[in-house]
Length: 181
Image 1: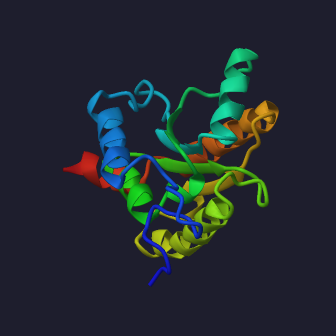
Image 2: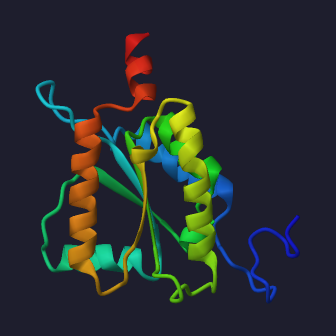
């Protein structure tokens, strides 16, 4: 049991302005709009959902865009106020909705705007990986990275390498089963 209500930090300050239902709705909208469609029939194009913290990672992605840096278009970013906002349910929902990979990006440890949110994200991702392996999705389909607001090159490298990893793994087992029926 937490010593404080979910969604608040230890000081009692409101930690996140997004409800779980709001973020789940964003995941659903991305899939209903067919934004995460794969490529042509010839080559598998992975569908990747990225949960990026507002203060560092999202701004790093924005800097990469404004600097016209090129990276694979397979990533669809959902901005959250803190990577600590991302829990097992959101990650599982992304996989269930059709993602081949999930990328969680947050501030570097010690730089979190909400004190320990990124450490909570690390704990959750680390704890979820064995479960993903157990159910056949595989732990390599989930990745956690620390990306600062000024680190556009790292953001590009992270997205590029994660996209390559997911391409090498092929479609998510959940997507393969869905396509068989």
